[in-house]
Image (cartoon, rainbow, N blue to C red; front, side, top):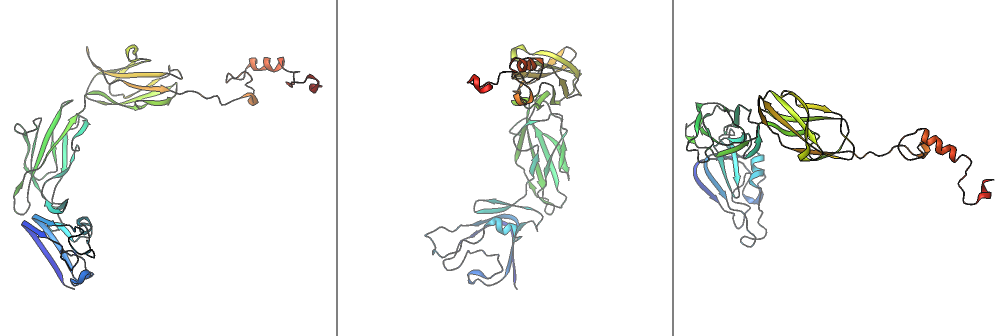
Length: 327
């Protein structure tokens, strides 16, 4: 069975469908469309392939649109850099991506922990050592970005972050064979404020909370202590506890059922207090699980002497509407 392979390293190949055959580019080995059996491969090392899709009415209606790019890539018929790279599909065009991808933090990610000390990415040439330059800063144009990695074969870079700041960064890669430089795309992310950030339990807006509750939250940064505040309105919150900032939970057992509560965790260092965001939750509406059959005759969800008094009061009363029926 013949083997055919195309190594595309530059320029553009345009493929059009034929009038009497199936698509003008066939990688299948079943000989469909009369083109003959064979196993084909396309190795993208540069340039682009434009595969013009079938348009109804232009070619005979019997023309088979064939497989998609994604199907051929999944079948291993189309690959990049001798199967060490990544193929990008863009409409009816495919090409080998020579740029770093999959940034961490993610593209345009919000609420990033300002305490992280590095960013990372995936190299475009899988399994190979890829030399990179990494630029990092707060300027979207990258004009004032600092070069935090200079010609190293790494997939992460050290960074120092500030709170509530948007950062922009770029990874430039060098082809492991030709050493040609490919400038990466500019990624960005925004850091969170320091101090308390997210309500873990109860979740913000949570319902059905019990009277005794462990309050939990996430916390960024270094502070001496935290103050826990709670109230039935945002304006009436009062401090109910203080503890080390390393402790991110607090047991509180002075809640009441059927109420809405607001709470906040403030970060404290000396006289400096950084208020946290305000969260809320509502406590449960209790449902009585006992009834008259169980002895709760007055419906207060308790079996007490008051229920016994009702029983005595009605001991001889059968409750029928015809008195003679009780005899």
